[in-house]
Image 1 (tube, rainbow, N blue to C red):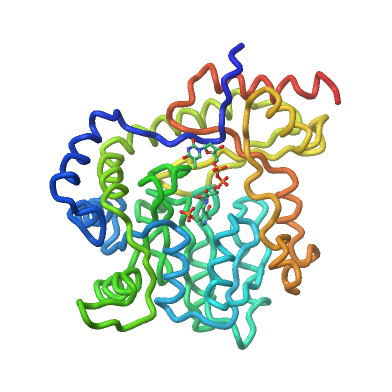
Image 2: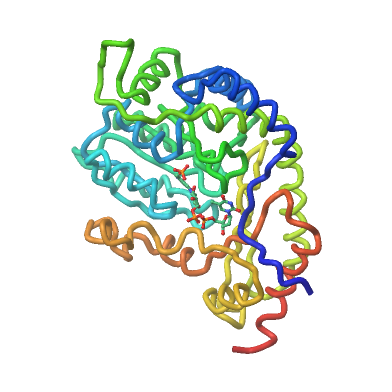
Length: 374
Ligand code: T4K
């Protein structure tokens, strides 16, 4: 059996020769960044592919989140989920906003809408839910609550590239949605991200914010930041788009094969995908329950020893990190579902170039590890 390491993900890179013409253009134009031709083309191409009207590219998803909160002038307290990558809550602290954590739903692993109202205080200004693993949040329930309390909704859609519900992009929901195009995401621009905007005026405002607040050579209208995507990233994005449907199709097959191969192993639960009509199979999370003869961490270590680097996304919970654990909403008693899930979760390798043999190796280790004892 090959010992070649298998990581939780690997970026899909098109053949290098297909990228060279883009590089030649960059070398010729000498336009490396600041809204060059590839940047403009990628914004248009992504709007068309994703089925959204306006989108502003960013250097990464975290800057997109920080800027989205700035653009809506969010202050005070924001209700969010502890079950996410730490950037979700960090974007709030960077804006001087206090995160208020609510528990997640045990099936979708997204923020549980029935817990939101109890967390609203006079200081609450917005809700920041995450479409975790690309599974859609309960969009209508969240919007109804936001409308009745006059709250903004910013979706952290870092995992949700291309996801649609009832054939409509989930990125059209809420006031703003942000995407990540990091190397570990289904669609990558090396580093990168975007804010999906509802109208041209909002996009213009966000475009100003991501360029230091400049509106022209001599006028600065806001304390903006440098959030721009480079021409290199935008060029890779344009090329990626040509291959992305094929990459998503392969992910779908891998998801299907995991479900077949892991079925019947006691204590291994493959998480169901959500109600999306277009899925991206961004992650393949499983839960290790007490029926499995080893603990989650024992399996995790056993896999590592066999060169299989699954990841415990999202353990620890954000609310357990030192800068959050003092908040009243971070207490375990408030977050019992998220705590339990974070102690059982492992995300298995899923990426277009994962071979059938490699996938079988992953499943075999999971199936045989309990038989080998502790
Ligand atoms: N909101 C949510 C819900 C997010 O999940 C994220 C990011 C964000 C916001 C912020 O978006 P960005 O600012 O990142 O655009 C990774 C990613 O760095 C992070 O983007 C992602 N979420 C998070 C879930 O995962 P790590 O620390 O697990 O990455 P790392 O470097 O350990 O990579 C995992 C595996 O991927 C490696 O073992 C090998 C493979 N890999 C990784 C990289 C970077 C490659 O094959 N090539 C590569 O270039 O955080």
